[in-house]
Amino acid sequence: MVVFRIDWMMAYQGMVVLAGNQVWWTWEVEDVFRKVKKGDKMGMKNYAKKMHKQISDLVQKVWPHYNSALNHLRK
Image (cartoon, rainbow, N blue to C red; front, side):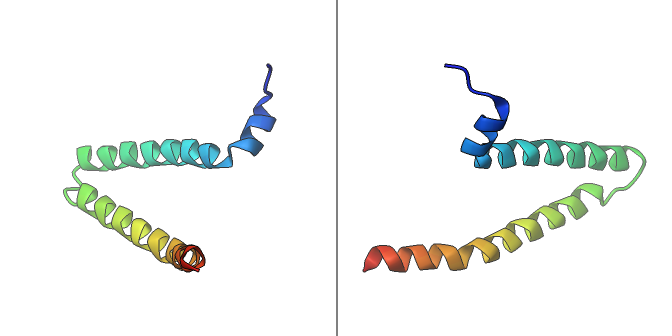
């Protein structure tokens, strides 16, 4: 069975997002290492703060949907 890339992307959109996020994260981490190498002593701590904020923002974005799904399952 042959699956074309576009068909796969439409069937597995979550995987596409994960792959894209991994590329983005890798680029950001490489950039942080470059900054640290150039003397930015707070580079990694600043990046950690940024990552914590992104996780917190994602939880806040997803949480209402999660609560809604749980309430639906409890009925």
